[in-house]
Length: 313
Ligand SMILES: [Zn+2]
Image (cartoon, rainbow, N blue to C red; front, side, top):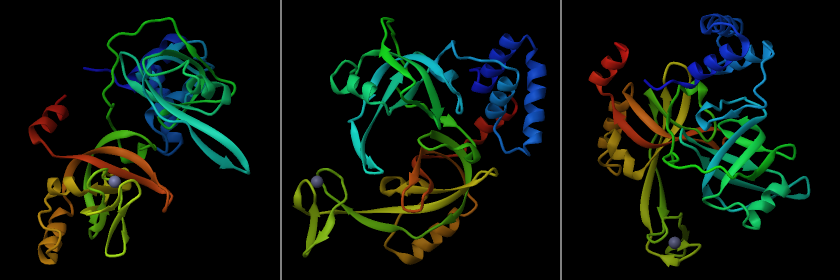
């Protein structure tokens, strides 16, 4: 069985403190109880480790050992995806930010650069896709490593083979969803809204806006737009609820066959309520409502045999 992050952090704290894993687990449980369950096991383990005076500052972590909330993290990885530098204005000042993804043999993670000296390394091509980089003094914010002016970023002379490039999907409770997570959760559909329709350009698939008697794409001009739909749901896994979005091609996976027939639609919506399934996707911030939104890209029916196997351990 693959060790989960919690087991790994228990082992690390145990090794660093000389206490047994059982003793630490008791401290973690006491901490969770004291905080009325408002903290995850991993989060509580972090607090316990800080209280024991353990400091991982000089330790290098594998990517899958990094946990939300950790400070001053050090790790090494190969750049597998690099995003364009973005500029934005804050309090009248021009700022830049850039993201990239690094991978090692255990996992991959997004890195966010805020410091102009670090961003220069990307702009002048010192760090590019395929580079092996070393980061030090980063902070874990949600599931990303953020590097500020006190952090370090440099090329490493280590070589990394067989890095894990596939997107890492974690099984999580809705309560523990963090922005930018790729997650999978077993949850009930507790509310389903009416479909909303929009139009896309047939070439680039971006949103097309109505213009005159047709549609216009910012890149391709006047186009014969394709009609698309999305449906919002509320999912509940017992820990929390989240607003979820399911797009066009996936709607059939939850049983929608005809969005234009209001009788069939309302029947199919009704059938979904209380249905439990496994949903995978990305957690985003909906800028309009300023809340978390779960963009579903995969829906699976519950496999009862698989569940029984898991329960029986
Ligand atoms: Zn287009």
